[in-house]
Image (cartoon, rainbow, N blue to C red; front, side):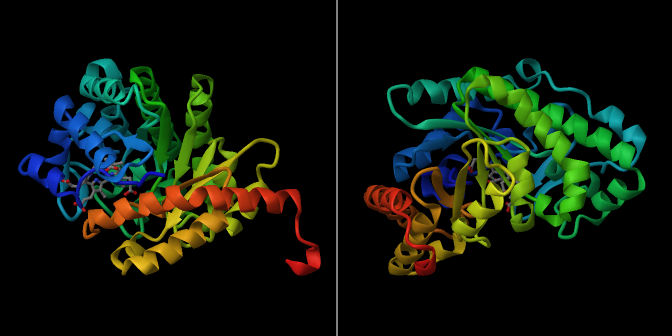
Length: 347
Ligand code: CP3
């Protein structure tokens, strides 16, 4: 159990440490990044420490003008629209362009060496990064990005190829520094029709996961509103597919199994983050439903998207305790159901 976007925002100790600097400045301070990575581990007792960085940090590291505007998100000085813009997207050399990330991860890994807590490295998925670049900022409909995809498919292909290479280089460097799990956040890819995903995005995502295959770390693939893409996302090669809260996990399991039946595939998710603002008996009821639908084995408990800033840290702490306390019984019940499946009529 861990939470996407667990570092920061809802934690008073985070706000105390991070009063002034822009988030992209904060990530360049390895000591601060290490501390912010560990805060939620101490406070919530989660099984994973997601490194304090941002999906646009590598874009800033190669010199693209990008700022993160509070309450809005990443904004580009000059959006990416033409072939000439490709020149601005040079390959990244993590050790030279963002040495602070490796330093922060080594510090986190050292702090957690004697524990079972995983160090989770991450990168932005190619479509999601392309959307920030092409739109120039956060977007609801991704219309410039989709138009580029359809009117200049070769340029779009090259753009996504470069962004996939950026993600792969960054993730490999994070694993070398001590990350024991990696997650690719293709947060906004749910905006695409499955046929467009399959043709224009999936090959690039597959290149990222293939490039990580020999490293021996579990690879997680997550996007929002990806109900219709889950099978294709599984096919792209991850070991774990993250599911947002819109699809019950047992339904998600069927969808991914139709595409990937020949290897183990875990699911991650998927409590609606807004449930955490309800009274705890509601949180408990919904979380137990997630655990049961998750089926015990091959399920990483998480929210269906990031922690909302309004969340009471105590709720997340109680939620972690609940998941720990109830998981063994749910694991046992699910295992026994697998061993003695009910008669088909009774299902
Ligand atoms: O789990 C963690 O909190 C680890 C650190 C982390 C950050 N960003 C730090 C951050 C992670 C994992 C991310 C990923 C990220 N960043 C994603 C993928 C996850 C998702 O939400 O789908 C995306 C899309 C981004 C881009 C981005 N950066 C957005 C949309 C925002 C929010 C802007 C706002 O204020 O609402 C950011 C800023 C950001 N990145 C913050 C943090 C802690 C908040 C701003 C701050 O603290 O100054």
